[in-house]
Length: 204
Image (tube, rainbow, N blue to C red; front, side, top):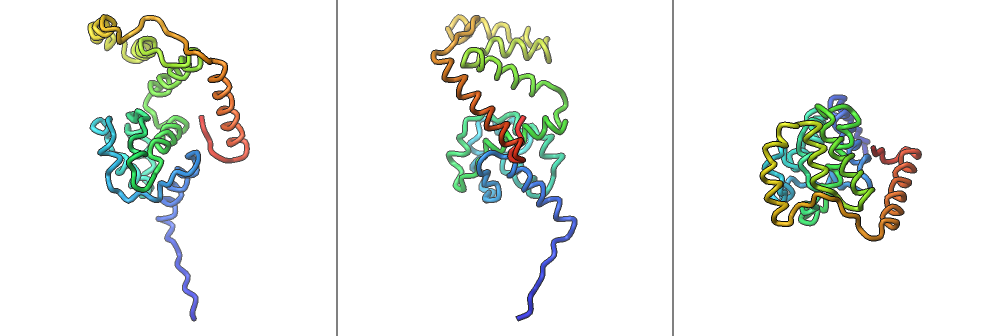
């Protein structure tokens, strides 16, 4: 029997490499290649209406090698990490984990227009490391004063109403068992460092 060799055109190879790059940069198994474009993820997303591309569209763009469009998309930044999409996905694609990957790639490669998103993330992480939970008032205040100070005036009434209903605290509170949380965070950082040193997943 004659052996048949199929060659992949050079125009297609870069597209395959971007798909593989995103999958390889996602901790664990992304299962991105298993997406069947059913739209369950977008229909389940509480922030879907604010995204310029649904997760389904974003994954199709990754397959098509549309690197610039994918990394400039606002979709990963509107992901609230509720994991509802992952729970409902019939193919068990790790949608939320892929969104984190795209955010890391966008920051690392300079696709973000400004430092607002990274600043917000770092402030959030700082509060979690210090108190074990987010401090909404401090988080919002730091963010708006640094990136949109005039907007803070407009939401003052809402903040006062939330405080009156005991839905907003002016003082951060610390959780119990901070030593255990710090041990978990240090272990996670150590795993990240090991992965980067061995050429595995590259994280920020």
